[in-house]
Image 1 (cartoon, one colour):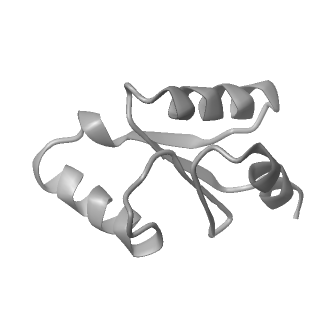
Image 2: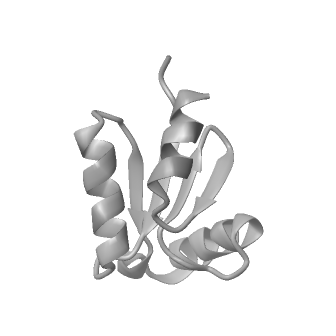
Length: 83
């Protein structure tokens, strides 16, 4: 079954890079949004969306089928993908 995975990341963040590499290694499709590359209203809208699920606005913020994982936590990501 395909999971809906979204990664909110910063283009300069090493943890975000490792998170994406991990998902790639698993063959997991995902949407990645580089928050630091957005501008104007789009950036504000995305930051507001992240703050709703992760008030500390830390990266990466990974959402798997609605489950929010803050930071690159392999075990939590695997668990969410296998649920």
